[in-house]
Image (tube, rainbow over all chains, first blue to last red; front, top):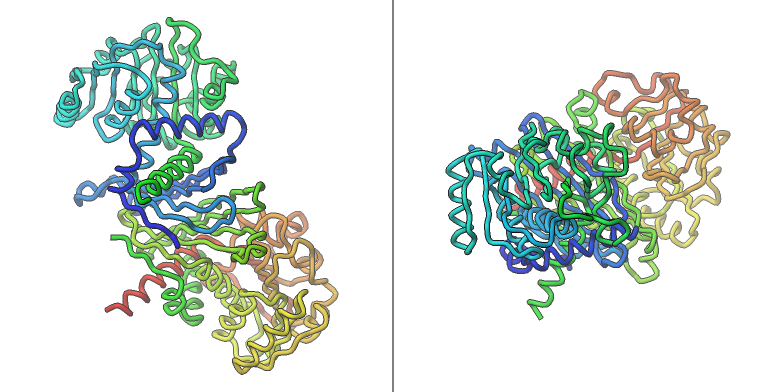
Length: 317
Length: 317
């Protein structure tokens, strides 16, 4: 029998700590060569300015396989509907039979994306950080803070977003959670204060300039999840001491590195999995500038879906 | 709210006549340039000898988009489980929001595949046929007869299958339905009698020899749905007057034409959609040998899923 698990149940099941744990395990599996990741399906629906993205992967050692379907229809907002949606179909990896349908409306994608940011920061950011900078003020900006808090101790947040009202609301929310959160007047102001910078926007032009990066800084960019999107000026990647991607094969088509592929073939681009698996080293000094360019990989979906099902099982027992 | 529709309800909703109608419309849309079909995802799970295939497409004029997930795990049969399974997730094409989950266990794929065979036969086979030949004795062998019956009047069936017991049972079933069905001792014997031949096996080596094809015959091959599979000897395609595929882009990677690509670039390979749309002509004389090589295309899934939802709506009204 196929289990149907809805969004509220999934939100209860997956905490930031659980998400970071299982996503770390998934990247480790990837670094150890225990994943199979087919190319993504991208289906554009120009008639309605929409797009579908389908991702999946097999992880040796995980008993289920998730097939994640995500949709993005920006015009929905004028109708009062969410611009992003989706679900995950989960299959038994041994029999191929359907196990569960996770009607997450994109929640699992959001939290696994933020968890990957935390896993990247854990291997790349300095051990001691004081201020976290956030560009953007949406759902991802919230999850990134919560997941980052699992791997680093910090209380100060400085954020910028193009919409002042949303930015203020975001900072209010963080303050209510106990953070010392402050709205900045510019991205440059955020960069001047942040030890870890996380960019979470759907921008199609560079937001962060290389000149604003400071020694010792770590930057995680998660917005560039499809061709045409980017948040970092190309010079940022050239200036960085180490550039980490979640999937080299995807970086050829989209992500921040896709814009500077020709000038970055000197071994400075490595996969996050190899760092988590201990096959390559991350930050080697407190002065380095590190960048993580995360586009989202199918094994994250398989991992978070398996965790959701396991957590729900333990709840219902 | 996402509707869940199970296999029995889907079987009641989709008759062969409905399936042939909507699949014909889908091929017409494709021929008129009204479809968008991204590449298929193929995920192998070698540890369990399994595979997943994911297909989708947008059809201009159809209000939903199906994402079809099919699995094949041959070792399931020793556990008493079905070797093939799957489901379709259906989304609103205007908003990207999930509409329905069709827990069809592969039924919709089976019937839309058979319906495509019927659509191909309708534009390629002679108007008057006497005997239908079937290679294989599984689910697809049954659906092909039922769908073909929608477009051609016939009563005689001659079939061959490597498993004699399954073959006899297949013929018994057809006789119970009123067909004059006969089990052949060889594929050659089937070819000697059949006006329309349909091959429905998961064979990985050629079954049908070119010498067995007769003037006026139409052959539909549906088994070659993934790399490595084939049912027709390459010479069959070279000998044919017209070779029709469901999707040229897929024929480069799998399907019968993938084995003879280099020697078939003389305009004899056309897409079924262009024939249904009336942009190209099919059979032009009763002496021609025609072959349809069907690998299964995402727009068939989108079309059959939309029909299933529409049929269920009319039932529940």
